[in-house]
Figure 1 (tube, rainbow, N blue to C red):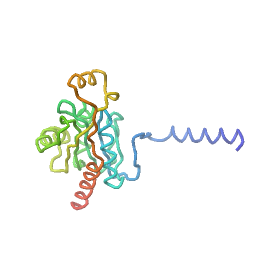
Figure 2: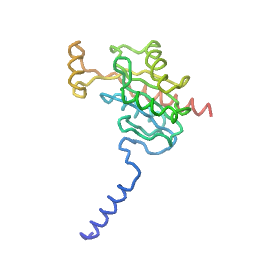
Figure 3: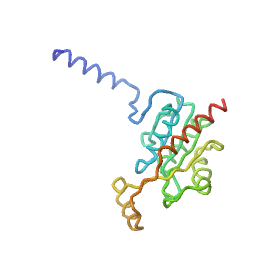
Figure 4: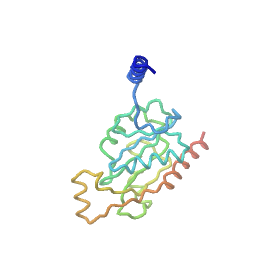
Length: 197
C-alpha cells in the first residue's frame, strides 16, 4: 500500500469514528440491543460480577459503568447493581437511577450488590438491607431476581483514605467474588424472564 492510500484509509477510518453516535468502551458484548447491565464499582468487583452475569446469559447483555452516564433508553431489559460502601451503592449510581426513573420503569429485570460483609456469606438479612431496602427502592422495582455477592479488596485500587481505614481494621486484601455464582445468577435472570414472556 502506498503512502497516499494509507493516509486516505486512515482519515476515512478516523472520520467514521468521529461520526459514530457514541463509542461505548465498556460494551463488552455488543450482540443484542435487548439487555444491559448497569453497575457502579470501586475496586472492579461489580464490573467483574457484571461480566460474569452476562456470561451466564450467553453474553447477551451489554455492560455499562454508571460513570460513563450511558443512555439506556434503547434497552428493553436492564439489570442494576453495584458495590456497597456503608450500606449504599455509589452516589453516581444513586443519582443516575433517580434521574432516569421514567426511562427505567418496567425495564429492570434484576438487582445485585457486591459487598465485603466481613468476609461472611451473605444472608437474607443482607439481601433485605442492600437489595429490598436500597437498590430496589432506587429502581422502584420489586419481585425480580436479586443476589448479594461477596466482593474483594485490593488496596492498590482503593483511594488512599479507604485503604488506610481498612488497614487500620487489620483487614487483609481478599477476593471472595465467585464467577460461578455470578454466572448462575445470570442464568436465573435470563430463564425467569423467558418463562414470564
